[in-house]
Length: 161
Image 1 (cartoon, rainbow, N blue to C red):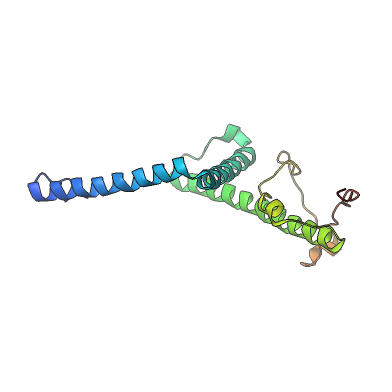
Image 2: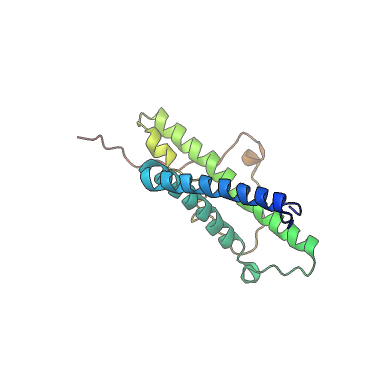
């Protein structure tokens, strides 16, 4: 980078050429974005997923008003690592139970379209209580790694007319 910022004529010309290549790539991307509705929808979907993950992280990180309170760098990294771990645990929990629900619906004869599955997200958190103190004592059936809590019964299926 230092060489590209040099004031010698050759290197500054090289830096300008690299900048022009970058501008061309950005222009091509913007034109594709303007002309391709499918690309715009895909990008918007990705942005929404990222925002949903950030919203979940904000909800989890509510203690002390969401501020990093550790006075030293290592402590802040530990807080952020713990936050990432909790968010990942919520996503894993939701993924496992969503897959179990899909399996149950499929086994009971419900048709599930791929388009519907694509819209599912493991980042929902309305069903998880994020405040309070927790004392976790697992009942014996749940200590077994293959046991899960029961799923809610699906609503009665009404066939499309």
